[in-house]
Length: 356
Image (cartoon, rainbow, N blue to C red):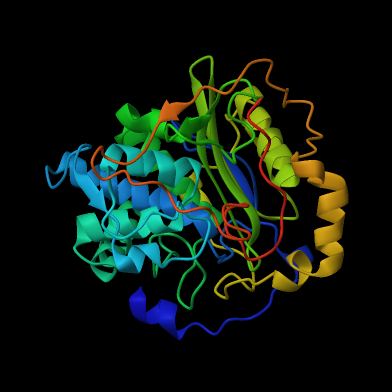
């Protein structure tokens, strides 16, 4: 996998030619709908689902506990936003680090988790790729624990569904980490970028991600009446669009009979360009597209949601605590220009919905 990943020649695949997505039943593995599910794609912050999975495996193996200190190294502190801007030497428990990882999508915390569990970032990345291969992610390769773009970093909608289903099946005791509406450090509150949590009936996770090359991505899960489904949406044009499409797919999976649907393992690889990593930067990060988002789908710091399946919250967000260990809790550095605005500050996008 490593050699194949690093040998890939990157190419630009027009946005119109690939819009990976699928929805699958967690129990039966029946696929209700799929499109371009084998197309290689930049995972962006969806990478952090694998970071969390490796962390959970380490806890299960007794290598660490949820109270193990995750110390911010100079290397971790130097990661670009989105981040917590912690200083070298500060520390938080693994429990807090995972909550921050999955809600705030903090790149510095992701690297610190990797160094804590793997000894080095490179050691942890090796663990990520080993676990990916073991669970059947046949067309995925990781080069870091946070999803920042780089040669050899890719996945597919199909593989992300495998990862999400594995997380739900293997670690139900940690399901709450993916369903958090937000957290507070005691000084500042952060809301989840996943606009389905608390707003789509039965939504219970999982993760969002964004970089220019991948567009707006989302892995989602929901459960109703004993049926649990997972959806994957890659390459959408805005935060609102990815939430709407995720809601459509989840609703389809939760309300449609899967009796005549194919199993996930029965669908043969398809797509002429599937082995080349798509790059939609030109469609996503041009000035015109950014203006359309800011004036339309993501206006005034609020995501304009069109889905009939998503409703507004009529209560404050439910926040959990996630912060530094007492004694290692010197004041957080102020966020820099563009810090924390979206899953990765590679293009100006609005601030997430206010905490109200």
